[in-house]
Amino acid sequence: MARAQVSTISYFLAKTDPGTYSMEDLRREGKTVWEGVRNALARRALAAMRASDLVFIYHSMGQSAVVGLAKVTKPGNPDPEFQFLAPVEPPVTLKEIKESGLFDEWSLVRQSRLSTMPAPDSFAKWLIKKRPALKAAL
DNA sequence: GCCAACGTTGGC
DNA sequence: GCCAACGTTGGC
Image (cartoon, rainbow, N blue to C red):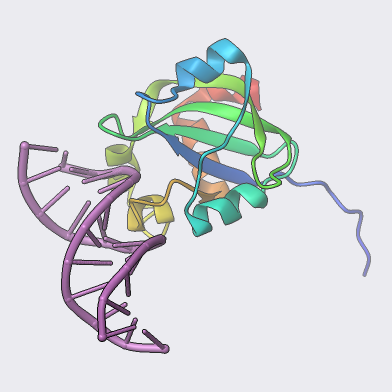
């Protein structure tokens, strides 16, 4: 039976070394083209991004935490454009994500070197529950 | 086409 | 700063 197509958004997670380009830089600039990712699997995730998809910005290199939320304004071809939406305050650390035990199958946990990847809907829900302030940005 | 050596990333 | 994971390069 046909059913009305509801447009759904996908979630992603993008890592960045804050020493090179941080969430604060994105916040200041408002928007940025997310480029410089070379790994094939990571580029596939970038290419899959569509306008209005949501991206969790993650600081690698010491901080290891989700620090912000962004929206895809231009799709990946393969470099998408991100618009800053909101900080995650306080950041949600990889440690917390691991300790939740909910995301053991996720690439963030399984494949530490992967820099860009899809994020499960369950992670978005879990994060919003942990940081209710994010609701306003969604 | 295999695989050893090397380089890079990111967690700790 | 170290090391594990893993992608890439180059000799054969």
